[in-house]
Amino acid sequence: MAFRVQIRRDTLLNWTTNDPILLDGEFGYETDTGRYKIGNGVDVWSDLIYSLVGVTGPTGGTGGTGATGTTGSQGIQGPTGATGSTGSQGSQGTQGPTGPTGSQGIQGPTGSNGSQGIQGPTGPTGNTGTTGPSEITVGSTAISSGINGRVFFQSSGVISQDQSFYWDNTNKRLSIGQGSSPIGALDVRAQGALSTDIAFRVRNSADAANIMTVLGTSDVYIGATITQAGQGHLFNIRNAGSTSIPFAYFDNNSYNFDVDRFCNIKLGFGLIAANSTQSLALGLGTLPSSRNFQQTIGILTAISQGTNDSGFAMSGADTAGNNAIYTNYYGRNIVLGGTTQGTGTRKVVINNGTAPTTNLTDAFQAYSADIVAGNASPHFRTENGSTIKLYQETTGITGASYSSVGGSSVSSNDTFGGYTIGQVVAALKAQGLLA
Image 1 (cartoon, one colour):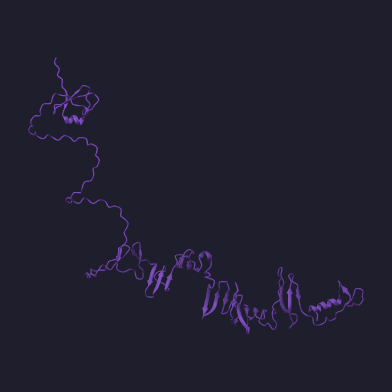
Image 2 (cartoon, rainbow, N blue to C red):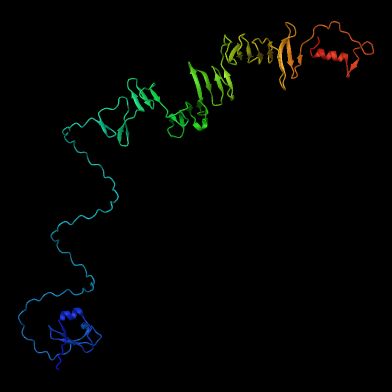
């Protein structure tokens, strides 16, 4: 049986492109060149050498150019070579079409403003445009006029109105929270009747303190906060400085009533001593003509008692015209139950009254009463109800006699308890109890 042997074969391009490893002794034939290589089992095709075929003959004449063969597949791209030096710039070619605009980059910082250029001439006035609508929008509704008296304001980007904000144009009065019938030039209504419902407040320019506050409870605070004033104060004024008078009422440019920063109270025109604190000063007044003061303890009045002399009288509530307490300044006298003080200074004058009939615990009661008509004297009612009278006896005791136990006569030198009768009589005279 005959065997046919075929050698491995391919074109030069395919051998080079695939670059296989031939077995040891295996032939590889290039069909388009007539050359061949014998493999060694180790080297790839490109590393093998061609086997000698014979002596190369002389080059024949150039044959005619054959038809261009088909382009083979592109081989593997080799590594990029080193960049050569930049050549001289050629002439600019024709500008190509503008490419698409790229995304905008991050905005750089704004440059400084340049100097303002010279203002150009005013251009001609354009034609007047068409008149727009005259309405304004309240909420989402376009209107040409609101409810009479309500004040428009902006709220959440639209013009709004509310019945709590009202202007009475006829009487020129503004209402806040009151409604459509303000009584005064500014009529403010609190939202409630609690101390936390502030109807009106004025703050200083630094917004650090209240100047005036009016609460829903009708409390009024001037220069004070609610926490400083506490609760239950209908009208509270805070001292505003070292030289201020926190509260004053004037009449004809005179102080009729004022309270200074030292808590001194002054009624009527007059002066308070510079070093006074927490005192009450009364200007000269007039005693009331009627003393029938229903449900009162009386009226305290400053009166004049002569040149550079003044005092005060507390008028009682009885109908007899009696004063409860009456004093004067320079005499330093105190008169109880009247106005007559007589001569002398620094004394207490007590007019006759009604003797007490009940006893006081841990106290005695002093009053004036007549021993006989025309002889008023001090009386003292003790805690146990005894009455002690201090007066001078000007007459002898009719029918007085003494009898000793022994029947003997008594001498002024006789003693009792270490005192002679003469010493006892002298002491009673010295006390004014005996004439």
